[in-house]
Image 1 (cartoon, rainbow, N blue to C red):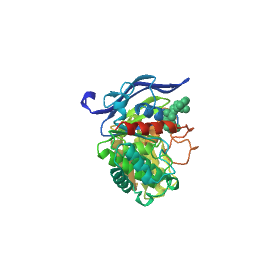
Image 2 (spheres, rainbow, N blue to C red; image 1 turned 90 degrees about the vertical axis):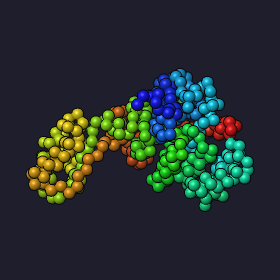
Image 3 (cartoon, protein in one colour; image 1 turned 180 degrees about the horizontal axis):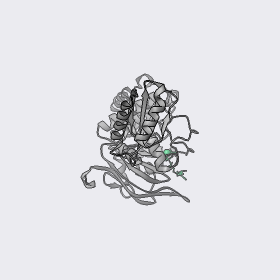
Image 4 (spheres, rainbow, N blue to C red; image 1 turned 60 degrees about the vertical axis):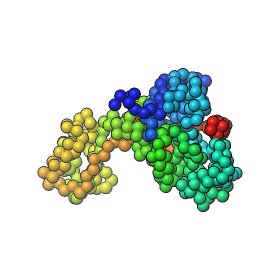
Length: 358
Ligand SMILES: Nc1ncnc2c1ncn2[C@@H]1O[C@H](COP(=O)(O)OP(=O)(O)OP(=O)(O)O)[C@@H](O)[C@H]1O
Ligand SMILES: [Mg+2]
C-alpha cells in the first residue's frame, strides 16, 4: 500500500530534542496509522517520554517536524492540543481529592456543566471499575486503581489521539490486563493510541505496529510479526514419551535442523533455535521434516510446538543488549536500566491547556 493511501494520525521526520550535550531524541521518523495502537518500545532513557512530550506540544522540538492529523506541532500547537490527550508516566490526578472529585473537576475544565460533569464522572468510574472507590481520596487507591483513574481522566472527552506513556509500569498482571482491555476499548471507538512501553509482551499484545527506539533513534519498525521475522529465528520445543529416547532424538534433530539442540531440565524435553537462513524451505517445513524423521526412527513425540521468536529475542538481536538484564524489578520482559524524572508542572500545564482549548 502506498503511504499516501493510509490515513495517518501522526507523522514525524527527523525529530530532534537536545538537552545540553544530550541528544535525547536524535532524528526520529514515525508514521502512525489512524485508528490503531502504535507501540514505541525502548529501555530507560531511550527517548520515549521526550518524543511523546514533543508530539503533545509539551516540549518544543529542536529539529525536524511532527504532524498530528496534518497539524505541525510547533506551528499549530493549539490545533494539535485540541485533538490529543496525554496520560503521563506518573499519576497526574490530585491525591487529596476523591475519584469523583478529580473527574468532575476535569470535566468542568473541559467545559461540561456541573450535572453533565457529574454524570460523565460516574459513567467513567463505572466503566473503569472504580464505582466503589468513587468517594475515597485517591491517596488510598492502589497503583492499578490510580492508573485506571488516570486513563479515565485523559479520555473524559474522547481525544482523536491518546498518548499513553508506560501505562502499566509497576502494575501487577491483573491490573495490567485491565489496562490492556481499556486500551482495546478506546481504540475500538476510533481513537489512535500511541503507547510507550518497556514491556515487550505489551507491545506484542496491543500494538499493530511497533517502533523500537534506543538512544534517541528508531532502530527497527514494523508489525510485531515483521520484527520477529527480521530477527530470523524461531524455536521448536518437543516432549518425548520416553526419556530413554532423548539422546537418539537429539541426534536426529541436530542432523535435520543443522543447529545445536538443548536438553531442558525436564528429562523428556528438547528445544532448538531454528535460523531462517539455514532453514531449507522455511521453518515450518524444517520442523515437519524433523517430526517425520523422529517418527521414522521409532521415537514417540508427545508434544511439539513451533514458536516465533519472542520480542525479547528480537530486542537482543537488534540492540546487542538483553531486554532483561536480571537487575530490574523481576518483571519478565522488562527492559532494565536507570530511571528518569518527570515534570509534574508540564502535566498540570497540559491539563489546563486542554481544558482551555474546548
Ligand atoms: N528535562 C531534561 N533535561 C535533561 N535531560 C533530560 C530531560 N528529559 C530527559 N532527559 C534525558 O533524555 C534522555 C531520554 O529521556 P526520556 O525520559 O525521553 O526517556 P524514556 O525513554 O522515557 O525513559 P524511561 O523508560 O526511563 O521513562 C535521558 O537520557 C534523559 O536523562
Ligand atoms: Mg519515560
